[in-house]
Amino acid sequence: MKAHITHHKLFFVVGALALFFGVHAFAQDTTPPQISNIQIGGLTATSAVVSWDTDKPSDSQINYCLTKDYGIARDPGSDKTQHTLTLTDLDPSTLYHLRVGSQDVYGNQALSGDYTLITKGALTLKTEQRLSPEEQAHVEKAVQQIQQIQTTEALQVVQDAITKVTKQVSRPPYIMGPPRIAEIGMDYAIIVWETDDPASSIVQYARESEYDVANPDNYSASTEEGDMVKEHTVRIVGLVSGTNYHLRAGSKNALNLTGYSRDVSFMTKSPIPTVQSFRVIKAEADSATLGWKTSVPASGVVEYTDIRTKQVRSAGSPVFASTQAVKIAGLVLGARYMAVVKAENAAGEKVTSEPLYFSTIKDTTPPVISKVSNESTLYPTAEAKVQTIVSWSTDEPAYCTFHYRAGLNPSIEPTNFEEEKEPRTSHVEVVLEFAPSTVYQFWMTCRDPSRNASESEKFVLFTPNKEKSIIDIILENFQGAFGWVKNIGK
Image 1 (cartoon, rainbow, N blue to C red):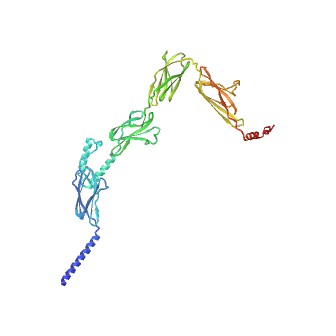
Image 2 (cartoon, helix red, strand yellow):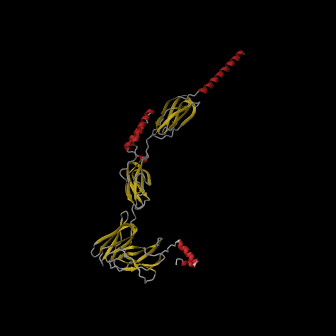
Image 3 (tube, rainbow, N blue to C red):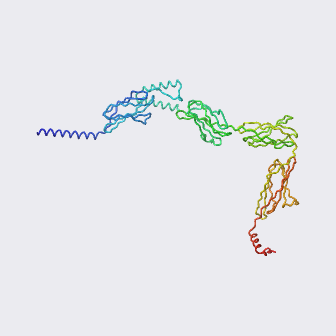
């Protein structure tokens, strides 16, 4: 019985010690697994098998990605010292970064350094990125050789070399020569250019009035076509007719590098004018005034031919306008002439009218006087002066004389101004002789260079009243109330 008790106590002590040391060991285990023997194999175009060992049971995980910003693949079981994970859904012929990791049951985690792998498979290129057969062969051979590399150090050397070469060859597309304006319309233009490599097509443009020469990147509009080509054609629309534009062409490659051409300018076409209402405004003994209209503003030249002598002359106006009139001088009395209008828009496009026939005759038509107006202003000076401006028009250049009289009695001799020195169609006279609060009658007589004379109707005007002083107003009020006030001062 004593021996039985002794053995029982011994068993209890041993068990307690085992439990004590077991708990103590669990509490003190903070050492992560040691990772060793990392192997990368089983490479296909879309998968890879990665294996490694740990010095104690732990789980398995792999961080991987195209760059060092890793993704993750994991086996959560923490019961093995030999680990294998298969990475799937990878891209063929692609360089991946990875690192392996393991965590034991106590939460201690270990991570390896950075490793790389390149999946197998042929290098595929998009249609717009086709290489020449020679360059394609070099690329495929390089990929095959890189796929044979098994160590991180060797892959790092290759990666450094690729980075260096990339910096050397990565440049924007080169635009060969300035862009050409293949076609110009009133509201569109077609731009063409070529690049040394396939790239997209960009046209930036602005009106000349909006283009800042000091800032060549200041274009108000842009259009882009994304097809990767070497021969570029872009049609820009919505332009304003008869307007100067600046533009530059650009092309962007697959690396988002953009090259630009130098600035070029062009003018959109203007609407072609049509000549309307070509007519003789006035024929005289040695001259004729011809007038016409155009559908859009245009300059115009009258080309006229003496039908008898066949002598051809011209006279014109460089002004761009929709209504034009030209006086032809130096003609022969009684001669017959043929005339045409040659109108030209802002873009230099010309159109010729139908012929017009006319003859010079002795001028017997007097000028017509119209648009008569007057305006009077009273100046509050000691003499209370009135200034009156009278204006009128004649249908042809004429010499005019201004006449007036005070009151409406025709027996009163009128005052006559001096006749104008030069013939004109717009006439103005400034009259300073009028008195305030007075009725006047005025009229004009005009003659053309052929001495055909006309007289306007007679007009009546009332000059403004003189302003009364405060003393005048007080006296008028007293006179209304006390008749004797009017005798003051007598």
